[in-house]
Each structure stands twice: as C-alpha cells, then as structure tokens.
Length: 282
Image (tube, rainbow, N blue to C red; front, side, top):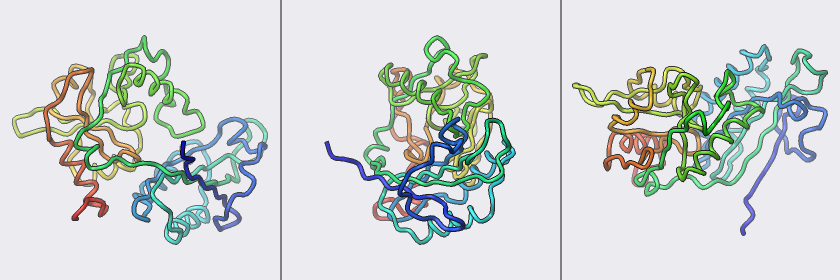
C-alpha cells in the first residue's frame, strides 16, 4: 500500500515553521482535547475559502473565551499565500497550550498539518453519494450540545459515520432527540423541497454547523433555515452533503431509494468547482 504524504508545522512567534517534534504532551490540546480545528481544501496550489475558515475558528475560540490573536491570523494568511502545497487537506489546530485543568486559555498555540487526499472527480459528483438516516437506536447519545463543534471531542461524529458505513451508506443523517434533522455525520445537509416556484433550498434549522462551504452556498444561493424531519427528506427533489473535502456532493440515494438523475444539487456542485477554477474547461 502506498504511504500517504503528510507534513506538519507550528507557530513560532509570528511565523509558521516546520514542526520537528510534534505537539508537546503538556499541551492541553493533547491532554484534554482542548483544541479547535478547521479543515481546508488545497486544490491546484490554492487554499480554498481561507477567510471563511478563519472566521469559523475565531467564532469557536470566542465562544469558549479564548483569544485568537491577530499575529496568529496574520501568520496563517501569510503561510497560505506563500506556501504552495500539493492537492490535499490542510488542517489548522488552535490548542489551549500549557496550563492547569480548567485554567483560562490566555496563550493558545497553533499547529498545522497537510495530508494527501483524493478529492471527488467530476464523475464522482455526477454519480453522487448514498445517504441513510440514523435513528436514535443506532447512534445512541451521539448528538448533544457539542455536536458540530470542531474540537478535540470529535468522537461522536466518527461513531455516527461508522454507523452509516455499517448500514452500507457513504454518509449518515443525524437526528436530535425530538426527531428533527441536525446534519450529516461529517458535514452539512442541503435539501431542495418542491414548491410552486421551483425547488426551495433549505438547511436544517436545528443543527447547521458553521461550515466554509455552507457559507459559500449562502453567498451564492438563497438558503432557508427550516426545521426538517425525515418525511421532509423523503419528498425532497434533491439533496447534497457539504464539507471541505467533498465540496458540494449530490446525494444519489436516501435509505436505499434512488433520487432522480441530474438535478439542482448537481448544478450547485459544478458551480462550486467553477467558482474556484476547478472545472475542466472553465
């Protein structure tokens, strides 16, 4: 099996430098999972949606009372502007740094990793992904107040994804304890509902997480936040999963039932590629 490429860096003062020794075991980001992260797609030498990702990281830090110093944001912008990386996923980790348990985070540390990733091809987008709704008996207590926060406690997302894969699907839909749709296990969910004026683009009102690709969708299409239940999904004319690796990925089937061919989700998927100069012939 071919070994996947992997690189690491850390913040040193106001510069991003190669990380030779990894994250110190004394860092609370490792010891207690006190870190926030963002996953950024690198395509054709460009880091996609950097501003949106930094805004999400800043929002997560602020919500927990962490500082997100300007020097870190400036260093990250400079690194992404000058470091030409191959196609893959760049992940930014903002950690709590060294300190006692429950002590305030006053001097966060920053680490970066890059790993080789295969992105969906145009053929993959045309084919779509299979989706399954995960009921409470499958995922147990997976969903909770911290769902959707990109932090060191990401195990519930992984357990939900495992449940979806066990059910034979590529992704899963997570429901809350009242039966409302929250999101997909590793991304946001877009739903096109039928209406007299044409398909109405919606996203779950109860669980849409801050996502850079979802922010792009909101900037380029009218999106309605709406409480959704599984019956709403079954009458949808199109569905899509969004995250940084997939971009906008159309859904080919829901709970084993195929959706019709090219639709609004496919059109949006290719519009996303086109907007970043990633569509062949664009």
